[in-house]
Length: 140
Image 1 (tube, helix red, strand yellow):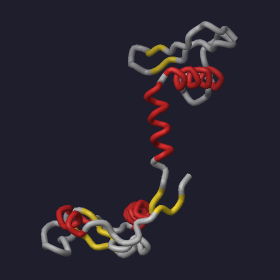
Image 2 (tube, one colour; image 1 turned 90 degrees about the vertical axis):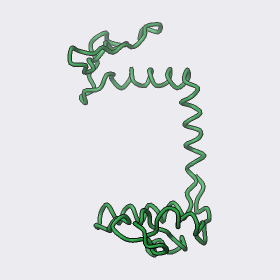
Image 3 (tube, one colour; image 1 turned 135 degrees about the vertical axis):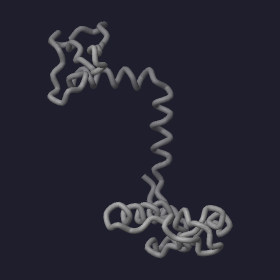
Image 4 (tube, helix red, strand yellow; image 1 turned 180 degrees about the horizontal axis):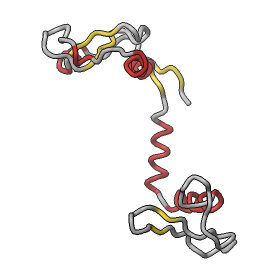
């Protein structure tokens, strides 16, 4: 392996990435998926990138702090899965339960029962405030 050589990738005339040359073999990278680097060179590049990129490290730390899941988030994900996989209707098809305007979101009054939701507009959702049992479930 050549220690001080940089990894470079090029673009062709259409703007697609061409594989650069491998640091070990000196031949073009072959990873079978059309990527820019082979596995070894990719690992070297990532290590160098993470070491030099302070913003990226801060984002990674923030993501790990944000991985605290609440039952509020689980209730929201439950409704999103119902919409995606089972055809649960969007809240925008209904009228607000409180004021009668067009609803925009579903409101959970008790996060322990994620299937019990009411369509409301954003203003009424704000007036209602947070639902019951908004607790941390697991901390990773």
